[in-house]
Length: 84
Image 1 (cartoon, rainbow, N blue to C red):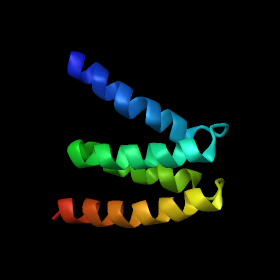
Image 2: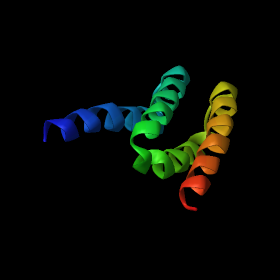
Image 3: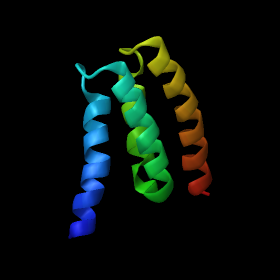
Image 4: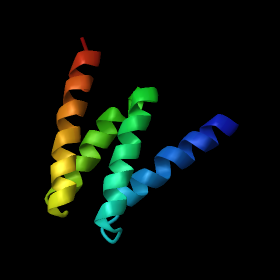
């Protein structure tokens, strides 16, 4: 139970920041990075992270787009590799 609460905190809040239309771009970029690193441990969030980045991509700053596209390439490769 305690592990789920910790995971929810470390995954739930960054997803909320990433998807927020009012959060600063730098917060969203750091959230993407954190979630990507957590996805190495909790692989179930890779698909949701990729979809979330895609959803915000056209609405964000150039810096967000740049980092988002780089992470999407990595995520798509990892998702594809894990499905084999």
